[in-house]
Amino acid sequence: MDDQRVKRSLEQTRAHLARANSELEAALRFLDPRTDDEDEMALVRAVANARISVGDALETIRARLGK
Image 1 (tube, one colour):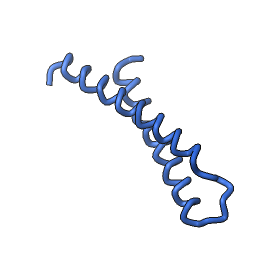
Image 2 (cartoon, rainbow, N blue to C red):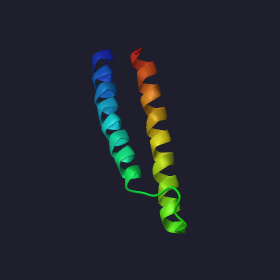
Image 3 (cartoon, helix red, strand yellow):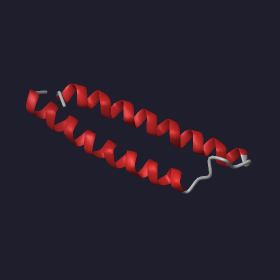
């Protein structure tokens, strides 16, 4: 791929990941991190871990784009 195509691809991916991060943040608002329910607690952990992974991916893209 040429540089412009790679840059465009990274920018589109960054936009999708930013939206995903917002959606995950919103999902966490519906969950109770202090719950005694094991299933809900597993979901809280899974969503929180997903946000961390998305954040890591966003940082990688920012570094590649030099921003």
